[in-house]
Length: 496
Image (cartoon, rainbow, N blue to C red; front, side, top):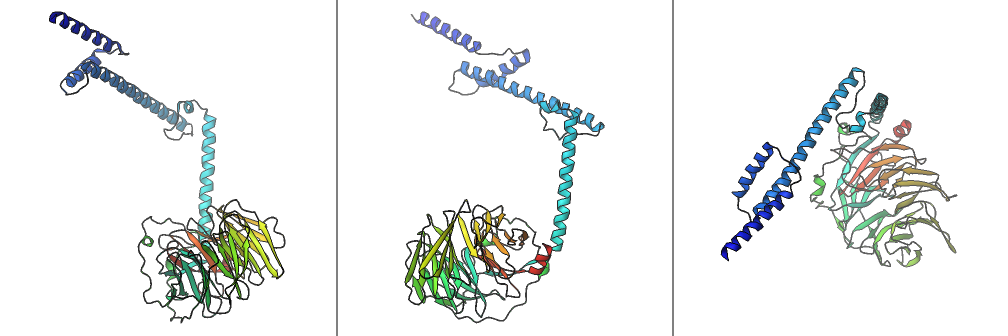
């Protein structure tokens, strides 16, 4: 019995060997056989739980894969030599192909195709060179048109909104996600006053037309009216503008910049902690607020999809303006008439008319395809709206069926502003740019942004102050700073 068992085991082993050899699908020459025999000897000397026959079969398969890669490599070298030969031949005829990226099909193309490619390349190079000449000329003529004069640094989080007082003394106000609002000296950049009355992000700030009062809207679902008294410091010399860049400079910032660190706020800045009036009717974040003409009423816009009209003296709710399908993003009042425009995420903005006390008409405008981030009045009979759909549209109040001008940009537009005298539109963008356009949609300039100056994060808001002799445009963003610019408007319009 032991002898019979041994012979049957030997037969099974021989059968397994024949089966394993039958799996080999490629014949090998003597060199390959010697190499595979050497590799099998090496495998036999290694410890493995796999049967020797299975290991040998795997080795054969991997050897076949290696040979296939070798063949592909040799074929690739031959193709490269053919391409070089063809390039040498075409070079002798005054033509050439692009590098070694040609496939087999490209090797059989006609010389006429190469000629057309060369012609197109020459045209593209010519256009690029001429555009560089035009850009350099424009940058030279734009020198000193747009200059950064002052940076207002002190907030510990992004700045959502900013505004300039309408009465003396003229100061700059900023509203920040750090739960504070600050008043700044425009000339020195020093913080004059800090408002600490809100329990949430301060989303907007607007000043009373005739009195020293500020209106702020907050994420704590309230709007506050508070009084301020400030004393302006001695003006400091204006920074050297020789190191400043032109309107067309555009250099990306490093991802590691000082704006990401903690900013030390002004410790010696006086503060106000209690509001004169608190408006509490909203059930969601109050995203914006503004004074109606005369300053006796205010309007607020909220994420609860409503805008509320309040009486300032009694703080009572006069009207609740409903109709938007989604959260409101902004509200603005006309400078001389009792008109209000509200913007919303529902892609519309609405015009509310309170000129007749007995009739409160409303018009809905659907000119955008994404969130309307802001809509503002001009001194004339126009409304300018900006949107996340990367467009800005100019509308005529007398005929609001379609825009009279459309500005298309490459980034979402945030809270825009229009200058009073020359009606220049300042567009703050998500991509850190600030661009200037006229009311007909013609681009006038792009504010400088380089490694040394400009905004490092999303620009949230812009505000004009044409009466100021130094800084006549202000911008703020999520890099925690506001910037004061000097725009030479006559030179800007002359370049147009």
